[in-house]
Amino acid sequence: MKILADQNMPLVEQYFADFGEVERFDGRKLTAEQLIDVDVLLTRSVTQVNNELLAQANKLCFVGTATIGVDHIDTQLLNEKNIAFSSAPGCNAIAVAEYVISSLFALSQENARPLSGQTIGIVGVGNIGSCLAQKLKALNVTVLLCDPVKHEQGLLHEHVPLDELLAKSDVVTFHVPLIKSGKHKTLHMMNKARLKSLKPGLTLINASRGDVIDNQALLEVMESGADLDLVLDVWEKEPNILTELLEHVRYASVHIAGHTLEGKARGTQILYQKLCELNNVEATKSLDEFLPVPAITQATLTQSYSEADIARLVHLIYDVRRDDGILLRSLAKEGFDTLRKNYPVRREFSTLVLKGKSQQLEALEQLGFTITN
Image (tube, rainbow, N blue to C red):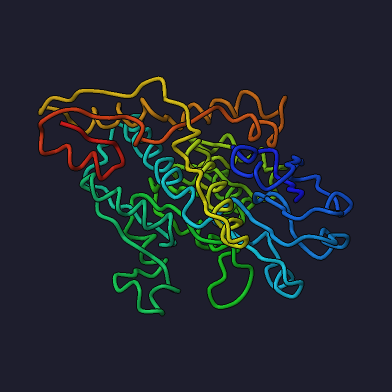
Protein backbone atom coordinates (compact mmCIF):
# COMPACT_ATOMS: atom_id res chain seq x y z
CA MET A 1 0.00 0.00 0.00
CA LYS A 2 1.34 3.44 -0.94
CA ILE A 3 0.46 6.27 1.44
CA LEU A 4 0.85 9.95 0.54
CA ALA A 5 0.81 12.27 3.57
CA ASP A 6 1.02 16.02 4.13
CA GLN A 7 4.48 17.03 5.34
CA ASN A 8 2.98 18.83 8.37
CA MET A 9 1.13 15.81 9.77
CA PRO A 10 2.97 14.37 12.77
CA LEU A 11 3.55 10.69 13.53
CA VAL A 12 2.36 9.38 10.16
CA GLU A 13 5.26 6.97 9.85
CA GLN A 14 4.73 5.71 13.41
CA TYR A 15 1.04 5.06 12.86
CA PHE A 16 0.92 3.93 9.22
CA ALA A 17 4.24 2.18 8.49
CA ASP A 18 2.65 -1.24 9.02
CA PHE A 19 0.26 -0.53 6.14
CA GLY A 20 2.99 0.27 3.63
CA GLU A 21 5.31 2.94 2.23
CA VAL A 22 4.77 6.52 3.46
CA GLU A 23 5.72 9.43 1.21
CA ARG A 24 5.38 13.10 2.18
CA PHE A 25 4.15 16.04 0.07
CA ASP A 26 3.83 19.83 0.25
CA GLY A 27 0.17 20.51 0.93
CA ARG A 28 -0.14 23.49 -1.40
CA LYS A 29 1.83 21.93 -4.26
CA LEU A 30 0.32 18.45 -4.62
CA THR A 31 -0.30 17.51 -8.28
CA ALA A 32 -2.51 14.95 -9.98
CA GLU A 33 0.57 13.06 -11.21
CA GLN A 34 1.69 12.42 -7.63
CA LEU A 35 -1.48 10.42 -6.99
CA ILE A 36 -0.74 7.77 -9.62
CA ASP A 37 -0.62 4.35 -7.90
CA VAL A 38 -1.37 5.93 -4.49
CA ASP A 39 -3.75 3.97 -2.24
CA VAL A 40 -4.15 6.41 0.66
CA LEU A 41 -4.10 10.23 0.70
CA LEU A 42 -3.73 12.02 4.06
CA THR A 43 -4.22 15.77 3.88
CA ARG A 44 -4.65 18.95 5.87
CA SER A 45 -6.77 22.01 5.08
CA VAL A 46 -4.41 23.61 2.53
CA THR A 47 -4.96 20.86 -0.08
CA GLN A 48 -8.00 21.11 -2.34
CA VAL A 49 -9.16 17.57 -3.01
CA ASN A 50 -11.24 17.98 -6.18
CA ASN A 51 -11.75 16.52 -9.63
CA GLU A 52 -8.58 18.14 -10.96
CA LEU A 53 -6.41 16.63 -8.23
CA LEU A 54 -7.94 13.16 -8.55
CA ALA A 55 -7.82 13.04 -12.35
CA GLN A 56 -5.04 10.41 -12.37
CA ALA A 57 -5.75 8.68 -9.04
CA ASN A 58 -6.04 5.15 -10.39
CA LYS A 59 -5.76 3.21 -7.11
CA LEU A 60 -6.98 5.63 -4.46
CA CYS A 61 -9.23 3.91 -1.93
CA PHE A 62 -9.08 6.22 1.12
CA VAL A 63 -8.79 9.99 1.66
CA GLY A 64 -8.39 11.35 5.17
CA THR A 65 -8.05 14.93 6.36
CA ALA A 66 -6.49 15.50 9.77
CA THR A 67 -8.80 18.47 10.31
CA ILE A 68 -12.29 19.15 11.59
CA GLY A 69 -13.29 21.28 8.58
CA VAL A 70 -13.98 19.61 5.23
CA ASP A 71 -14.62 22.61 2.98
CA HIS A 72 -11.41 21.72 1.07
CA ILE A 73 -12.72 18.23 0.23
CA ASP A 74 -15.21 17.40 -2.53
CA THR A 75 -16.92 14.69 -0.51
CA GLN A 76 -19.59 14.13 -3.18
CA LEU A 77 -16.87 13.37 -5.72
CA LEU A 78 -15.25 10.87 -3.36
CA ASN A 79 -18.59 9.19 -2.87
CA GLU A 80 -19.13 8.97 -6.62
CA LYS A 81 -15.69 7.42 -7.05
CA ASN A 82 -16.33 4.97 -4.18
CA ILE A 83 -13.35 6.36 -2.26
CA ALA A 84 -13.70 6.06 1.51
CA PHE A 85 -13.30 9.30 3.45
CA SER A 86 -12.74 10.45 7.00
CA SER A 87 -12.13 13.79 8.68
CA ALA A 88 -10.91 14.13 12.27
CA PRO A 89 -13.79 15.74 14.18
CA GLY A 90 -12.78 17.08 17.55
CA CYS A 91 -9.06 16.41 17.12
CA ASN A 92 -7.99 20.00 17.79
CA ALA A 93 -10.97 21.23 19.83
CA ILE A 94 -8.94 21.41 23.05
CA ALA A 95 -6.07 23.21 21.31
CA VAL A 96 -8.29 25.90 19.78
CA ALA A 97 -10.18 26.41 23.04
CA GLU A 98 -6.85 26.87 24.84
CA TYR A 99 -5.71 29.35 22.16
CA VAL A 100 -8.80 31.45 22.95
CA ILE A 101 -8.29 31.17 26.71
CA SER A 102 -4.64 32.19 26.41
CA SER A 103 -5.74 35.21 24.36
CA LEU A 104 -8.41 36.17 26.91
CA PHE A 105 -5.93 36.14 29.79
CA ALA A 106 -3.33 38.07 27.77
CA LEU A 107 -5.87 40.78 26.93
CA SER A 108 -7.03 40.86 30.55
CA GLN A 109 -3.46 41.45 31.70
CA GLU A 110 -2.65 44.10 29.13
CA ASN A 111 -5.97 45.94 29.43
CA ALA A 112 -5.92 45.71 33.25
CA ARG A 113 -9.46 44.35 33.18
CA PRO A 114 -10.40 41.18 35.08
CA LEU A 115 -11.77 38.36 32.99
CA SER A 116 -14.23 37.51 35.75
CA GLY A 117 -17.65 39.02 35.08
CA GLN A 118 -17.19 39.47 31.34
CA THR A 119 -19.68 38.15 28.79
CA ILE A 120 -18.20 35.92 26.10
CA GLY A 121 -20.17 35.06 22.98
CA ILE A 122 -19.34 31.86 21.12
CA VAL A 123 -20.50 31.68 17.49
CA GLY A 124 -20.59 28.05 16.35
CA VAL A 125 -21.19 25.36 18.96
CA GLY A 126 -19.69 22.28 17.34
CA ASN A 127 -16.77 20.35 18.82
CA ILE A 128 -14.62 23.44 19.38
CA GLY A 129 -17.34 25.83 20.52
CA SER A 130 -18.73 23.25 22.94
CA CYS A 131 -15.28 22.50 24.34
CA LEU A 132 -14.58 26.21 24.84
CA ALA A 133 -17.95 26.77 26.54
CA GLN A 134 -17.21 23.96 29.00
CA LYS A 135 -13.78 25.35 29.85
CA LEU A 136 -15.10 28.90 30.30
CA LYS A 137 -17.50 27.70 33.01
CA ALA A 138 -14.43 27.51 35.24
CA LEU A 139 -13.70 31.24 34.90
CA ASN A 140 -16.72 33.06 36.35
CA VAL A 141 -17.79 34.53 33.02
CA THR A 142 -21.17 34.64 31.30
CA VAL A 143 -21.26 32.56 28.11
CA LEU A 144 -23.68 33.22 25.23
CA LEU A 145 -24.05 30.66 22.45
CA CYS A 146 -25.04 31.22 18.81
CA ASP A 147 -25.64 28.32 16.45
CA PRO A 148 -28.82 28.61 14.36
CA VAL A 149 -28.36 25.18 12.78
CA LYS A 150 -28.20 23.40 16.13
CA HIS A 151 -31.07 25.56 17.38
CA GLU A 152 -33.28 24.53 14.47
CA GLN A 153 -32.37 20.90 15.11
CA GLY A 154 -33.54 21.28 18.71
CA LEU A 155 -30.01 20.80 20.05
CA LEU A 156 -29.38 24.31 21.42
CA HIS A 157 -32.28 25.82 23.33
CA GLU A 158 -30.16 28.68 24.73
CA HIS A 159 -29.30 29.96 21.23
CA VAL A 160 -28.82 33.74 20.97
CA PRO A 161 -29.17 35.31 17.48
CA LEU A 162 -25.90 36.70 16.14
CA ASP A 163 -26.72 40.41 16.23
CA GLU A 164 -28.10 40.14 19.77
CA LEU A 165 -24.98 38.24 20.83
CA LEU A 166 -22.72 40.90 19.29
CA ALA A 167 -24.57 43.62 21.20
CA LYS A 168 -24.44 41.84 24.57
CA SER A 169 -20.91 40.42 24.55
CA ASP A 170 -17.55 41.82 25.67
CA VAL A 171 -15.78 39.13 23.63
CA VAL A 172 -17.03 37.30 20.52
CA THR A 173 -15.15 34.26 19.25
CA PHE A 174 -15.93 32.41 15.99
CA HIS A 175 -15.84 28.62 15.60
CA VAL A 176 -18.00 28.01 12.53
CA PRO A 177 -17.34 26.01 9.36
CA LEU A 178 -17.01 27.90 6.08
CA ILE A 179 -20.37 27.75 4.31
CA LYS A 180 -20.40 29.73 1.07
CA SER A 181 -24.12 29.89 0.30
CA GLY A 182 -27.59 29.18 1.62
CA LYS A 183 -29.61 30.11 4.65
CA HIS A 184 -26.76 29.57 7.08
CA LYS A 185 -23.96 31.04 5.00
CA THR A 186 -20.87 31.96 7.05
CA LEU A 187 -18.81 33.50 4.23
CA HIS A 188 -18.41 37.16 5.27
CA MET A 189 -20.74 36.58 8.20
CA MET A 190 -18.97 39.63 9.61
CA ASN A 191 -19.49 42.03 6.73
CA LYS A 192 -18.84 45.77 6.73
CA ALA A 193 -22.29 46.65 8.08
CA ARG A 194 -21.91 44.31 11.06
CA LEU A 195 -18.33 45.39 11.70
CA LYS A 196 -19.34 49.06 11.73
CA SER A 197 -22.11 48.32 14.22
CA LEU A 198 -19.84 46.76 16.86
CA LYS A 199 -19.68 48.55 20.18
CA PRO A 200 -16.39 50.17 21.24
CA GLY A 201 -14.08 47.96 23.28
CA LEU A 202 -15.37 44.66 21.90
CA THR A 203 -12.86 41.83 21.43
CA LEU A 204 -13.24 39.89 18.18
CA ILE A 205 -11.50 36.49 17.91
CA ASN A 206 -11.44 34.39 14.74
CA ALA A 207 -9.94 30.91 14.93
CA SER A 208 -12.28 29.25 12.43
CA ARG A 209 -11.92 30.24 8.76
CA GLY A 210 -10.50 33.52 7.48
CA ASP A 211 -13.40 34.13 5.11
CA VAL A 212 -15.87 34.38 7.98
CA ILE A 213 -14.72 38.00 8.42
CA ASP A 214 -14.46 40.29 5.40
CA ASN A 215 -10.81 41.25 5.90
CA GLN A 216 -10.86 44.24 3.56
CA ALA A 217 -13.96 45.60 5.28
CA LEU A 218 -12.33 45.00 8.66
CA LEU A 219 -9.27 46.98 7.56
CA GLU A 220 -11.45 49.88 6.42
CA VAL A 221 -13.41 49.88 9.67
CA MET A 222 -10.23 49.83 11.76
CA GLU A 223 -8.65 52.58 9.67
CA SER A 224 -11.74 54.70 10.29
CA GLY A 225 -11.02 54.56 14.02
CA ALA A 226 -13.00 51.60 15.33
CA ASP A 227 -12.11 50.65 18.92
CA LEU A 228 -11.86 46.86 18.68
CA ASP A 229 -9.40 44.33 20.06
CA LEU A 230 -8.68 41.83 17.28
CA VAL A 231 -7.27 38.33 17.69
CA LEU A 232 -6.87 36.72 14.28
CA ASP A 233 -5.44 33.26 13.68
CA VAL A 234 -7.07 32.81 10.26
CA TRP A 235 -7.13 35.11 7.25
CA GLU A 236 -8.69 35.50 3.87
CA LYS A 237 -6.54 34.38 0.93
CA GLU A 238 -4.00 32.48 3.02
CA PRO A 239 -1.04 32.41 2.61
CA ASN A 240 -1.22 35.81 0.88
CA ILE A 241 -2.85 37.64 3.75
CA LEU A 242 -3.82 41.31 3.96
CA THR A 243 -0.67 42.50 5.73
CA GLU A 244 -2.00 46.05 6.13
CA LEU A 245 -4.42 44.63 8.69
CA LEU A 246 -1.62 43.44 10.98
CA GLU A 247 -1.00 46.83 12.57
CA HIS A 248 -4.60 46.82 13.83
CA VAL A 249 -4.51 43.30 15.34
CA ARG A 250 -3.62 42.73 19.00
CA TYR A 251 -2.57 39.11 18.52
CA ALA A 252 -1.98 37.65 15.07
CA SER A 253 -0.92 34.11 14.18
CA VAL A 254 -0.52 31.87 11.14
CA HIS A 255 -3.54 29.54 11.35
CA ILE A 256 -2.06 27.55 14.23
CA ALA A 257 -4.77 27.76 16.92
CA GLY A 258 -5.26 23.99 16.71
CA HIS A 259 -1.58 23.12 16.42
CA THR A 260 -0.74 21.60 19.76
CA LEU A 261 1.36 18.49 19.51
CA GLU A 262 -1.57 16.56 20.99
CA GLY A 263 -4.15 18.14 18.64
CA LYS A 264 -2.25 17.40 15.45
CA ALA A 265 -1.35 13.90 16.62
CA ARG A 266 -5.00 13.15 17.48
CA GLY A 267 -5.88 13.92 13.86
CA THR A 268 -3.33 11.40 12.66
CA GLN A 269 -4.57 8.82 15.16
CA ILE A 270 -8.21 9.22 14.09
CA LEU A 271 -7.27 8.58 10.44
CA TYR A 272 -5.16 5.57 11.48
CA GLN A 273 -8.13 4.14 13.36
CA LYS A 274 -10.40 4.67 10.35
CA LEU A 275 -7.99 2.91 7.99
CA CYS A 276 -7.74 0.01 10.45
CA GLU A 277 -11.52 -0.22 10.49
CA LEU A 278 -11.73 -0.24 6.69
CA ASN A 279 -9.14 -3.01 6.50
CA ASN A 280 -10.55 -5.05 9.41
CA VAL A 281 -7.31 -4.59 11.33
CA GLU A 282 -7.16 -4.03 15.09
CA ALA A 283 -5.98 -0.50 15.99
CA THR A 284 -3.22 -1.19 18.51
CA LYS A 285 -1.26 2.09 18.48
CA SER A 286 -2.08 5.00 20.78
CA LEU A 287 -0.92 8.55 21.35
CA ASP A 288 0.74 7.83 24.69
CA GLU A 289 3.35 5.69 22.95
CA PHE A 290 4.68 8.55 20.87
CA LEU A 291 4.34 11.88 22.71
CA PRO A 292 7.44 13.15 24.54
CA VAL A 293 7.40 14.14 28.21
CA PRO A 294 7.10 17.96 28.43
CA ALA A 295 9.79 20.06 30.10
CA ILE A 296 7.50 21.18 32.97
CA THR A 297 5.16 18.56 34.38
CA GLN A 298 4.08 19.65 37.89
CA ALA A 299 3.16 22.68 39.99
CA THR A 300 1.82 23.05 43.53
CA LEU A 301 -0.91 25.52 44.49
CA THR A 302 -1.93 26.94 47.84
CA GLN A 303 -5.51 27.83 48.70
CA SER A 304 -4.90 31.52 48.11
CA TYR A 305 -4.47 31.47 44.33
CA SER A 306 -6.27 34.12 42.24
CA GLU A 307 -7.32 34.80 38.65
CA ALA A 308 -3.87 36.29 38.04
CA ASP A 309 -2.32 33.00 39.16
CA ILE A 310 -4.57 31.05 36.78
CA ALA A 311 -3.35 33.34 34.00
CA ARG A 312 0.25 32.58 34.94
CA LEU A 313 -0.45 28.84 34.82
CA VAL A 314 -2.13 29.17 31.40
CA HIS A 315 0.78 31.17 30.01
CA LEU A 316 3.30 28.79 31.54
CA ILE A 317 1.96 26.22 29.08
CA TYR A 318 1.04 28.55 26.20
CA ASP A 319 1.14 32.31 25.70
CA VAL A 320 -0.44 33.49 22.44
CA ARG A 321 1.90 36.50 22.44
CA ARG A 322 4.76 34.21 21.47
CA ASP A 323 3.01 33.42 18.19
CA ASP A 324 2.12 37.05 17.59
CA GLY A 325 5.79 37.94 17.95
CA ILE A 326 6.86 35.19 15.56
CA LEU A 327 4.47 36.41 12.88
CA LEU A 328 5.36 40.10 13.19
CA ARG A 329 9.09 39.44 13.28
CA SER A 330 9.35 36.82 10.55
CA LEU A 331 6.38 36.99 8.13
CA ALA A 332 8.07 39.19 5.53
CA LYS A 333 11.25 37.13 5.55
CA GLU A 334 9.91 33.59 5.97
CA GLY A 335 6.37 33.70 4.58
CA PHE A 336 3.08 32.44 6.05
CA ASP A 337 3.43 28.77 5.08
CA THR A 338 7.03 28.47 6.26
CA LEU A 339 6.11 29.87 9.67
CA ARG A 340 3.20 27.44 9.85
CA LYS A 341 5.35 24.50 8.80
CA ASN A 342 8.04 25.35 11.36
CA TYR A 343 5.64 26.15 14.20
CA PRO A 344 7.33 25.57 17.58
CA VAL A 345 6.16 22.66 19.70
CA ARG A 346 3.17 23.58 21.84
CA ARG A 347 1.57 21.40 24.49
CA GLU A 348 -1.88 21.37 26.12
CA PHE A 349 -2.89 22.37 29.65
CA SER A 350 -3.38 18.71 30.59
CA THR A 351 0.39 18.14 30.48
CA LEU A 352 0.72 20.17 33.69
CA VAL A 353 -0.20 18.26 36.87
CA LEU A 354 -1.37 20.57 39.66
CA LYS A 355 -1.05 19.56 43.28
CA GLY A 356 -2.96 21.09 46.18
CA LYS A 357 -5.89 20.75 48.56
CA SER A 358 -8.07 23.68 47.56
CA GLN A 359 -11.59 22.86 46.37
CA GLN A 360 -11.02 25.50 43.71
CA LEU A 361 -8.74 23.03 41.94
CA GLU A 362 -11.91 21.57 40.45
CA ALA A 363 -12.21 24.72 38.33
CA LEU A 364 -8.66 24.26 37.05
CA GLU A 365 -9.46 20.65 36.21
CA GLN A 366 -12.43 21.87 34.18
CA LEU A 367 -10.12 24.32 32.44
CA GLY A 368 -8.03 21.34 31.34
CA PHE A 369 -5.20 20.93 33.85
CA THR A 370 -4.53 17.55 35.43
CA ILE A 371 -5.22 17.49 39.19
CA THR A 372 -3.71 15.31 41.89
CA ASN A 373 -3.73 15.49 45.70
